[in-house]
Image (cartoon, rainbow, N blue to C red):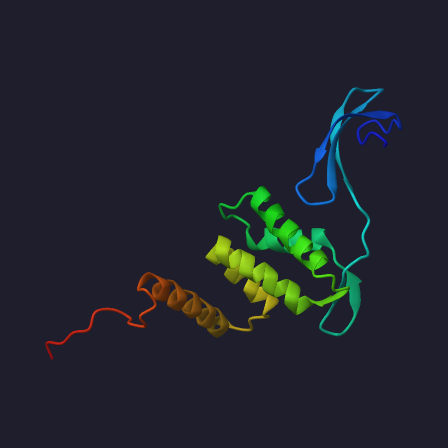
Amino acid sequence: MKCPYCDNPNTRVVDSRPGKIELEVRRRRECQACGWRFTTYERVEQVPVMIVKKDNRREAFDREKVMRGIQKACEKRAISINQIEQIVDEIELDLRESREREVSTKVVGEKIMNALKKLDDVAYVRFASVYREFTDVTDFIQELESLIHKEHGAEDGDSGMQGPVDTDD
């Protein structure tokens, strides 16, 4: 492994341990020339999961692309990079465990939205606005009303009542 700092091809493994996801090994390496330490990840090469786009084009699942999309939705929110990586790891693992070789963008988008909805409502709405191609403020309002309705339904024991009923009329 070549050192990313001085380009020396001689590095040695200082420490190895399991990675965050299955079939991944995290390795700490040290450059023999400059002494710099860095981390590498080794993963089992798997048959790529192909993502079927809306226009039926196909491209390999790109975890970095998913990561960038989620990071954009979570911008300026109290969400750590570790939480985002965990979402991406879970989505990638779920796709690979399904053993489906082709998955539509709809499936991936819904998985992302479900994870963001549990994590942060603002990030969820941001992602949904791009993914569902909101065209005007009405689309935002409908999505927000849906979130509010679900939130109040859960708080009220899902009784369907919006608030106290005035019987003094």
